[in-house]
Each structure stands twice: as structure tokens, then as C-alpha cells.
Image (cartoon, rainbow, N blue to C red; front, side):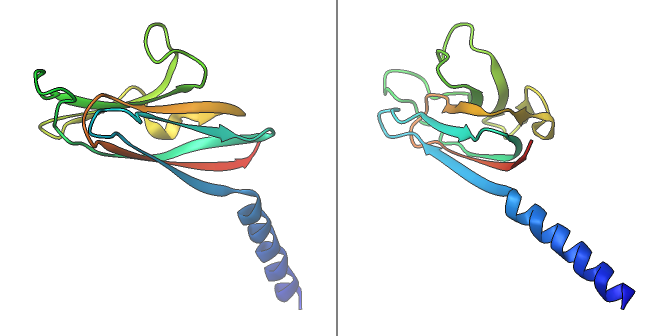
Length: 139
């Protein structure tokens, strides 16, 4: 009987944790003219988000035929409302070059986002796609 009660207690705790934590995916894909380079997402009040993964599907085509093709593609995440250029406080940045070498500003598992709105931005390259997965849980 004690084992059954203990099992039900553990099961209910796991179920409660599952209900209070959610995983979300955000995707941005640039167009042929290199617009649609950003997507905003929000971490609700009293929650915290942990970055889980960021997948980049690069296309090595320039936005303008008179310009050379990019030698690397990056995706960065920063607090929304900050300019995408200049002195933006980048919270996470992942870069991939033509040879497939990937670098990160900081390890993705170390990035936690507090409540607020954030922007994911892809560098200028035609039809490049990036998918970010975050895990939101109680603070």
C-alpha cells in the first residue's frame, strides 16, 4: 500500500511539472530579397526560458547579385526593442561558415531568458532558415 501511495505521489509531481513547463519552437526564414529576417517571442511574467537548440539551414546566396555570396551565416538573439546594429546586447549568437564549422558566443545550454520580449535575427542571405527551441518553466 505504501508503495502505491509513493508511486502516485511521484507520478503526480511529474505530471504537475510537465503541465507547468512547455517547449516552444520559433522559425524565421528569409525571403529572396532578404526581408523577414527577424521573429519576436515572449517569455511570460513569472517564467524563465532556457534555450534548448538552434538549427540553421544556410543558403549561400547573396541578397544582391552584384554582391558576393556570404562566407558565413549567423543567428543572434537579443532583447526586443534594441537596434539590430550598433551596441546591441547579444544574448546568444551562433555562426556557421561554408565549411560547416559552427561557433557560439556562449554555450546554448548556459542561456536563460527572464520575462520579456526577445528577437531572433538571421543574417542577410536568401532563403536561410533558423529554428529556435526554448523551454519555458516557472521561475
